[in-house]
Length: 85
Image 1 (cartoon, rainbow, N blue to C red):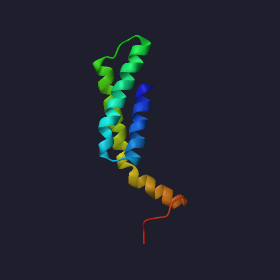
Image 2 (spheres, rainbow, N blue to C red):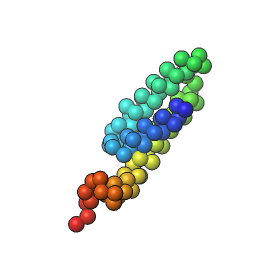
Image 3 (cartoon, rainbow, N blue to C red):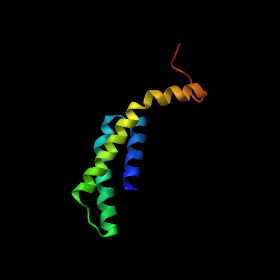
Image 4 (cartoon, helix red, strand yellow):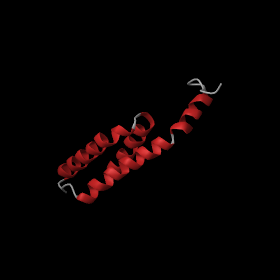
């Protein structure tokens, strides 16, 4: 479940933020993975931490590549004005 949240957060960050958000986002993913492992009593394993950081950054790349497509859909629906002349 944590991977879904990490990937979703990465997608939202990719849609709205620049590349400078990746370091704080990765640190947040590490902190949340360690906290979830500590709460469940399993401890923060390196594989869990690496997987959550990779999922977060992969979600960022998905959001980054989907920016233009989302902007076209929003413009076609009429929510935002189009950039076309």
